[in-house]
Image (tube, rainbow, N blue to C red; front, side, top):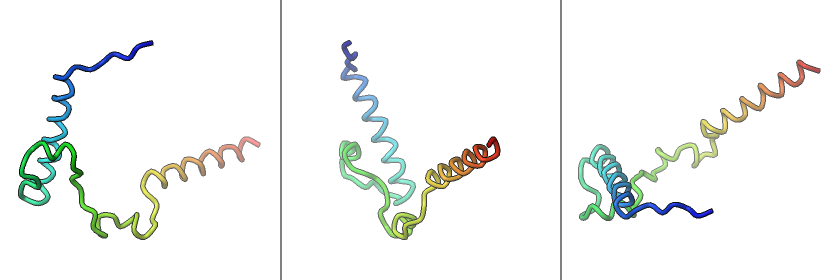
Length: 84
C-alpha cells in the first residue's frame, strides 16, 4: 500500500502556518521578533526554559495528564472492587 505524497504547496502552507504561530507567540511574550528572518522560526523552538515556566519538571511535580491517569486508574480500581 503506497502512501499518498503531499505536494510542495501543502508543505509550504503548513510551514508558513507554524512560522506565523511562533512569530505571534514571540511578539506577545517578548514584544519583538526573536529571529531576523522568518524562516528561522520554522526550525527554532519558541518557548521559555526558565525555572518558573518549568516548575513541575524542575521539582518533580506530576503533570495534569499524570494526575488524570492516576484518577482514572483509581476510579477503575474502585469499580472493580465494588463488582466483586
